[in-house]
Image 1 (cartoon, one colour):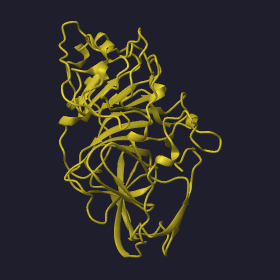
Image 2 (cartoon, rainbow, N blue to C red):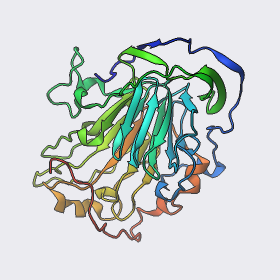
Image 3 (spheres, one colour):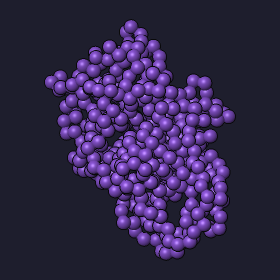
Image 4 (cartoon, rainbow, N blue to C red):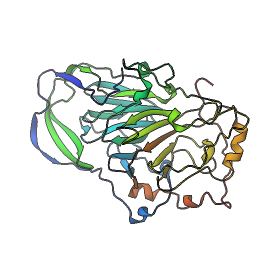
Length: 386
């Protein structure tokens, strides 16, 4: 089963050596992941970041660029063009991670085994996992969420035995778990770049291969979850974001965040239903949304593939232009959208220098009556059950 409790643990059996054995003194890493902030970003306003226009470069770790950051949560974009250097490894020693794969294929290799990934899946990696990312496609595109709290399926979806309830949109048996290959009983120098202290990176050098496990047991391990396995729930009237929740982190609603998957579902069919969301003011939450395509009704004509919006909790937001009126035609129809949303709880986020550099400077004016919002053309994401 997937790890669903903050007390989850795992026990590992190494073939020969302790994982504490270092053969060289630690050194400062040749890269860092400390976020930087532009002074202009401190003005209260919504932001629209064009992550699709950010360059592809480096590997999945060195190419990681934080775009928004908080005291407990960070969201980054990584668009690698290559695998990590041979026999090098990474460990996030301060935050749990979830990758969403917007594009690309490859393998996450860790001491727990190999996890294959593809477009439109989540990859959950617990804090402290030693891993590397190898691409099998020419390039990839990740949205990365980091949290100081464990990131699990929402606990209210499960009964006390850890099984999904009959009304849950996610089922614990639909995760994909690592395949453990033969252990690597090898001596040499094996560097691990460890993230700690707010994004600093220290390189430690093991004298043996870190993937030397004979086996492991427990409920804390990396896993893959396909967004198509989030089974959207439809109802006669508007379906609010709690119905779209996939994961959560922290003690919701007092800390942490909810992570939602906006998969295609049938819009409300009541004769008075307005499928577009109403204007709202999340006074205790910052709303962060990654658009996998441009077919999100409330933002059509504004967003493109890879758009990322950041709506601070201190200011309201709503559909742009006549999106609410246009949405009336969507009553009872399956939408072509696909998006990932994160709502923080009592945590204010800041746009970083990377995010600010790729923002739409006119986004704050996109609700003006004179703003143009052309209708999105083409095909969107299709529900597997449609």
